[in-house]
Image (cartoon, rainbow, N blue to C red; front, side, top):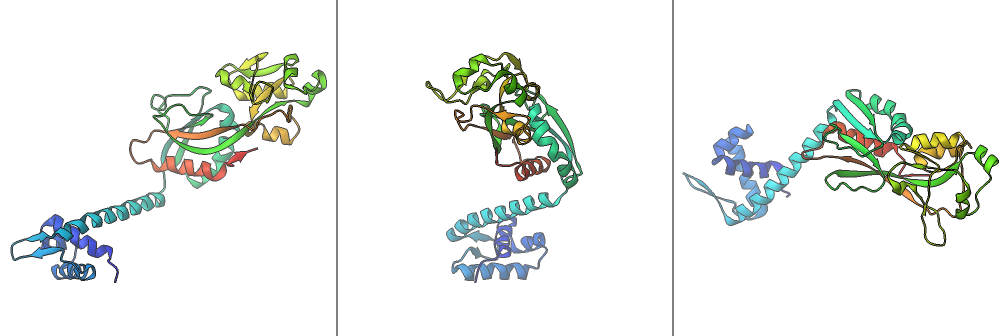
Length: 298
């Protein structure tokens, strides 16, 4: 016969309260019922767990060893029950989310309606920033960051990844011609970022390596601004698929230097502080993003 949780609970309560009658009162049972549970437990284990006298109860060496295991098992069951209870409750409260404006516009905003329908008690606050922010200073619950992470004090949950490509508009190619080699970029208008400078190294294979440093003719702090400039025919740009896949599918932007492009992806993480149990509203949001974002955007 297998040991039951009720039998382990009877043992722990007897030890903690100091007597069978006190344990019975805590458990809402009769003393005889608790005593029978202890007897069954000892019979199943084929050991004596408690020495009983008229004045006191004392754990045997085997009892001490089993009690430690029983406490761990009961704690694990209690934790599992609490987690399930949280999932049953309706998450509520204000949820502050921060990410770069392109990811906010192209990936988060399309998911807002479905999220709000599923979790109507959660109030979303969506903030866009092109710079990495201090989550505590900005009172932010979750930030979505694109690219390699550097802040080791944050907890991170990977959401997806997104490929990089060199793109431009058909109108620009009609006016300026198509570059066929990486060296041809010297004769073209290049659109790049104000910072970080690492974003101005494009994943292009050449004789000296697999990334090409560019000197932009026009710089912008936001990838969305660069996308709009490329759509307007102002030059070539290196953008992530999450903001350009629809443009490519509809022919507004086309990839150039395809054969020279190195397969390179930007990781996308949700980052947050976690000093205690993660609030259910945050967990729900992270789960929803993971459920709806494609793992690899192309």
